Amino acid sequence: MMQAHAFTAENQEVAPSPFAQSEAKFGDVKDSLASAEARTMTHSELERHLEVQGRELMRLLLQDHLSLRGRQERELGVEGPVVGGDGVVRTDLRDSARTLMTVHGEVRVERIAHHAPGTSSLHPLDAALNLPREKFSLGLRRRIAEEVAKVSYEEALRSILAHTGAQIPKRQLEQLLVRAAADFDAFYQGREALAAKVVATLGNLLVLTTDAKGLVMRLAALREATRRAAQRKVKALKHHLKKGEKRYRKRMAQVAAVYTVEPFVRTPEDIIRELDRQDETDRKPRPKPEHKRVWASPEKEPEEVIRAAFEEALRRDPERKKTWVALSDGNETQLCLLEKLALEYKVEITIVLDVIHVAEYLWKATTAFNAEGSKEAEAWVRERLLATLRGKASDVAAGIRRSATKRELSASKRKAGDTCANYLLKYAEYLHYDMYLDKGFPIATGVIEGACRHLVKDRMDITGARWGLDGAEAVLRLRSLRSSGDFDEYWAFHERQELKRNHVEHYANGELPAMRQPVPRARPGRPHLKLVK
Image (cartoon, rainbow, N blue to C red; front, side):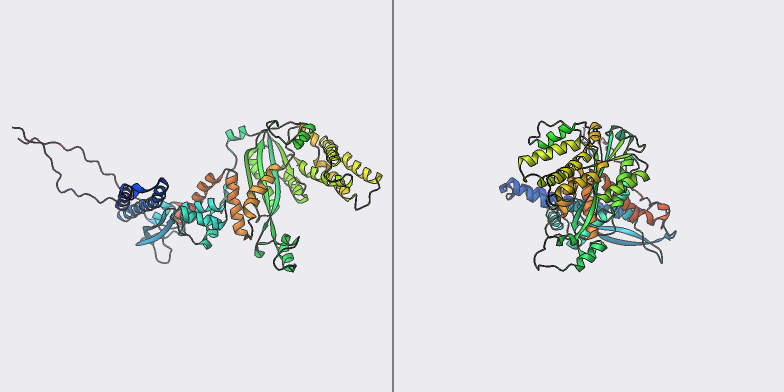
């Protein structure tokens, strides 16, 4: 007679799950969703419930994983001896623990400290996990960097507290932000040249442009001359700043942009039509800037920032085969630096003065001859701007002076006209617009003015804000990375630098000890059935 097939597994121990805590929490979440109370919730109430409960589940999953890594380190150890950068072998092993504040909440990391008398301890598991020195995780630091780059410290802190499991004191926010931006210069300097396939797709014009924007700073963060002027200045009104007083509270941030673009050939008449046109739908489609990088620095001197612009340009055109163009609003310091650095880097560069600034001078000059806002004033400006665009800036300047003399205008009445004429003659070498338009060069500084506005003003010019130098520099660096589309690449680089600073440099030969890994257990085969007769 045939009997039932049977088999038994005797004396087999079932290992406890390393994720028991998180599995229990997952069960609780499922039970809560199946409860009678949950069946009365709206979808938005369910979303909020899951957001809170899911955050704790994520924290427990992370905690269980870290606990598993800690147990494996205690049981298996590391490959070979742990030797510090000082050459001392750490043979004394001690249990050690630290906390880590993450985007999911606080967790505990239990690890082994490798020690030797008279030395600092080394923690190989910290290195394997790339833990930061401070309590706050790199993931949380990234969240802080992204938030503070967009909104004020207070708004960023509220967002982090509302949407993560992290707790962070406000006073530490700026310190973490400065750390987050620490590798900005090294990141860009390390990109020796763009990939060949990228360089090949870049436009034929390589454009550099620079400007400056003032930030309201704390007294200690002002440049020395401005600080002395601020200290000498006696505030006239107790609760209000008079005109001109704010200038002694500002420090200039130098702003720069580098991009490539295809030539866009136009005529002087095209420019006049563009300036006159209210409806932009029928404008000629113009090529867009490629791989635009913008940045700003209140900490560095103008020469350092403009030098960095030349180095960025050389990464895009290492063989100097493109046509280099620099756009400026006429600031003498910037013009001198552009010419000086072009000689130093041995590049041929055409400096173009912003046509919008020229137009503004003409609009001021017309008040000497026409009623402000009249059709005659508009026609006067259009005629002289068209002549300037045709390469006749010197003739325009001479005509303005001659007209003022013929009309026998007083010195005060003709002042605006003389100022415009002086401007056109002073910068005549940068006003060859006929040539620029024929070669397809840009002639307006819209890119850098946009950068001054959205990069600096929109974030830094918050009512009542007074910046410290480190905080302002860090915020502008992070906003620059976001605006240039480089933030993700930068953050990966920053994490590698943190690993190097915090761990790699503290071990002999810069080699991290390898963590021993558990030998995978062979999966039990299917049991053989024993025939019982």
